[in-house]
Image (cartoon, rainbow, N blue to C red):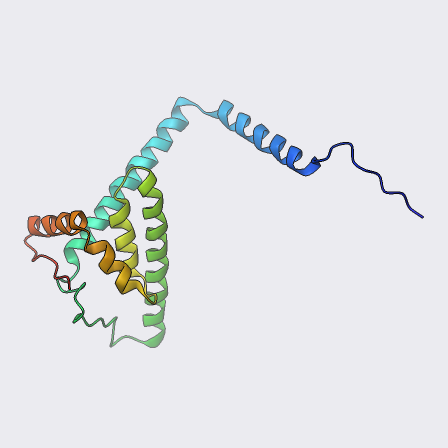
Length: 160
């Protein structure tokens, strides 16, 4: 017959996790230097610049009728099967990463909604057209994109 002992500490695992987290936090806090903070800010600044550049490039290059119900999409029709599927997988992966980055940018600096829209445009998922339409039909988003397209002598987007 064995006797079970009740632990003296009723929450042993959470306290250990709390201690591990606090140790990590204080070690991180003490390791911060002006150089590391500057490097982090530089990466933040560069990521915002790259995301703005990607949004501008895609929104200017996208066909004017892309958000129209009459738009027909055909991805590399004359290419080999494996090449087409590799392109689709890569495009979806990049689109997913852009959606995640856009969600993060909503709470920080950067074009969050436009980056989410860009990610959705790139992804091949069921039900994406209503999501795209809902985002693009927001007056501020549509006017910003059409103003950007006008700056590069492109026609405004056609939205159904």
